[in-house]
Image (cartoon, rainbow, N blue to C red; front, side):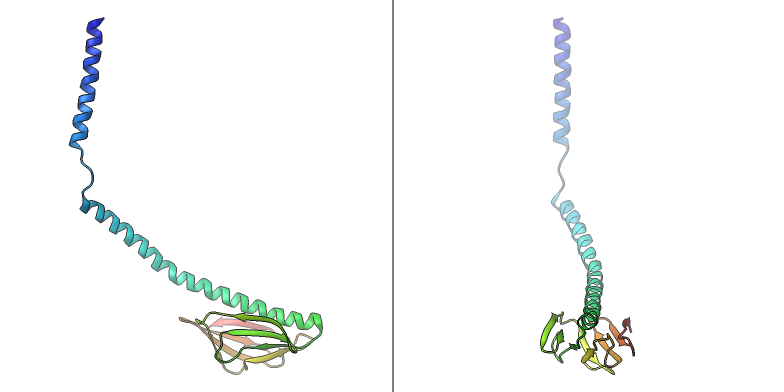
Length: 165
């Protein structure tokens, strides 16, 4: 039995010695290898950030026009529901639009400086009548950093749409 224990002990020592030899022969990554991996990681991250930027601008434009359309429809619905005139003001040089019922401000919305309103056949001030009709028709442009959008108000019931030019 002592021989078996000796052999067992010998085998244990032998396996422990081989693992120690194995650890001594393995070395970690060099500084250059670590820097190469880090630079590849930073390159991938920076490329993904650059690819996200146009998507963020597109989402911002969609959000702006969704809010603008909702506010114009709100002005029309407010005029119908309250049987009153609702004025829409887009002041020159400011980045905001306002809705008013006579002298009472209903809504005042500021928007990003990325957007500018270019007046064409539709003036910057127009009005919804108590029956929901608009007092004039025409269009104006909304200029962004990369795009130009046409906001067209149709004659009659105050319908409007936005198209990219």
